[in-house]
Image (tube, rainbow, N blue to C red; front, side, top):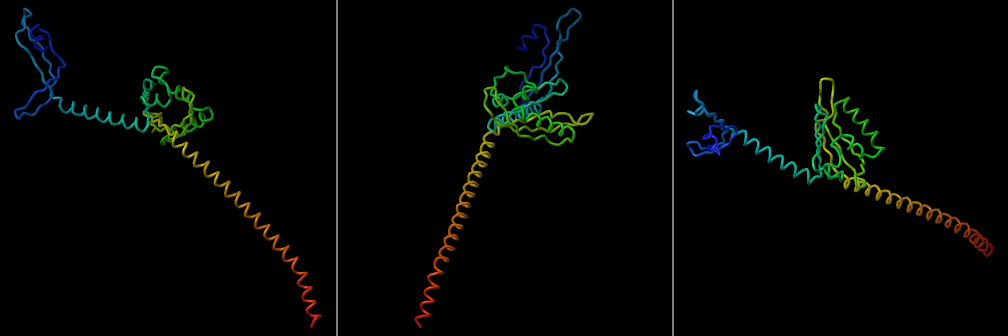
Length: 242
């Protein structure tokens, strides 16, 4: 393809090739070739620039690999990512966010109000209050919220973000994480209910034990009272008999 372009007198730019050094080590070059023409417009020579981009491409491959590992980790942890661009006021959602909200990409616009619409009404005021405090203090935003998905399921999410310092104080985080913590919250709720049941059982058994003790005391008192009179009679008869 490069040869065909040069034979036709066209320039070649942005072509990457694998070259080899004298020791046999491969490296990646970015090739740009411009034809040199005479006064008649005929190509008489070529001017070529080769740039070694091996390190740059290695960094790009390493970054792509890290991004892949990050995406796999996010999928396993059900950890979504929301990126916010303050210059354009646009958001980008990762695939996990759509899974958590149970909505297909394209059904909703990737905006903050679409996320806020899924939060239960009672929790929205707490969210807005916490966000205002975060933008004032610059502290990390970390809040667990109940949401209702687009399929009507109730879930819990943990939303985290670190505000960024701007010219006029702090601005909203450029990156948010949204994690589905429904299982965790359900386990906490089950533990709470179990503890309540155990507490009720302990209170009931304590009450039964107290009632049994009172009954035993009443029985002991009645038995003691009933035995005193016959014993006194026996003592009196024994004195008379002497």
